[in-house]
Image 1 (cartoon, rainbow, N blue to C red):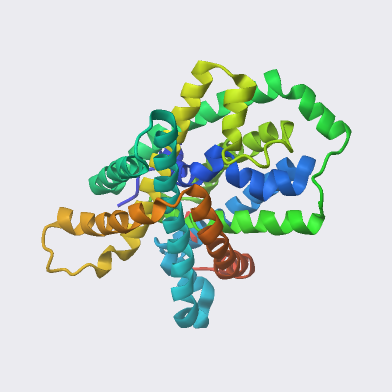
Image 2: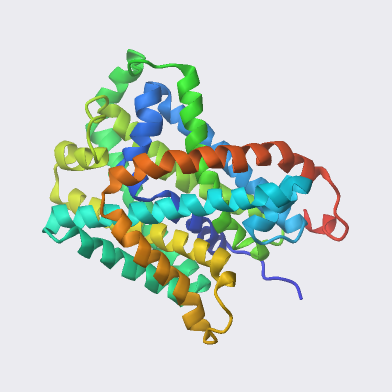
Amino acid sequence: MEKKKLSIVDMFTIASGQFGCMVGGGVTSGTTLVLYYVSRGGIYAPFAASVAILVLFLMYYLSVEIGRKYSIDSYDGLFKLVYGKASIMLSPLADVSVLLTCYVCILAVFAGSGSYFNQMFGWPILAGALGSAVICLFITYKGLEFFSNAQGLMSIVMFGLLFSIYVVVIFYFGKDELAIKFATRWVPEGFSIGSVLWWTTMHCSGLISFVAVYMLQAKKFNTRKEILGTMGIGIVCNCVGIVLPIIALLCYAPQIFSLDVPALYLISDVVNFPAATLAYSLLLIFAWITTGSACLVTINERLKRYIPQRISHPKVHSALLPLLICAVSVPLSLGGLLAVYSRWAPISAALCVVMLFIPLVVRGPILLSKKRPGNDNQSA
């Protein structure tokens, strides 16, 4: 039976899974964008981020197209093929890389939401972390299709908020500062091309772990054209989520370098308008929910097979692992967002460079160049 052709809405829904993961607390707060790009590259930061996004989506394309041609619909199956004969040793490390990255994102979601509600409303940090955990658990419990639709809706809201907030910051408040930065060719102290390339690779490689989200939807693609269309939507969304905020943050560098939440400085001190603060608050909340639920779904889809089958009710079976993950993660997240990033993010990024980025760059084109019987007629 021929599969249904994907519409633009279907493509956006699929692309929103990765977008929802990527636009997490670190990106929305501006913390990771300052760390990886603005504080390393100065005026070259937007260009470095643009290259990173193009390379990232080339890797996504290679992965999904390989999955389509070789009838693979999971990231573990993809990397078993990429690793070839070395798979028996390397596949477990690829699993660790992806799952650790997703788990770090979950910790960051709970830590960031706890801190936010504590600062804004005086709630206990534990209450904010538990609240976000409950919402993420609900989305995960409702299943993959509900998750995809919820991600699509929330991603539309996030896309609109990101675009409107940062366009206003850049073109209404920061255009003169940005012009000065480029006129003087401003770069931070200690700038070097090597440092820019390294940190760009680290960030790009960490985001490659979200290929797991795309692979969950690999069965839906019929043709290469549908994959390219979905990736094109993803590139636009990622540019709005990464490049646009980097340009806005660059306007007010280096004074933002020492701030815990640099994007909040743009909203509260630069724009200084109540509606903008409310919009930014909504953006943060949506970012945490989409990231937490996407990563929780990804981990659950990969590991739920190991839950004992004697747990007969399918709903209980599907909900047990996410519940255990949240029960462990909420207490660990109470140390704060900065602690999560400083302890865990460098480890997961380095693993992704070695286990995901380099193997895909080397082996991906080779696998796609090989003819697969019965699949060539689908590659139009």
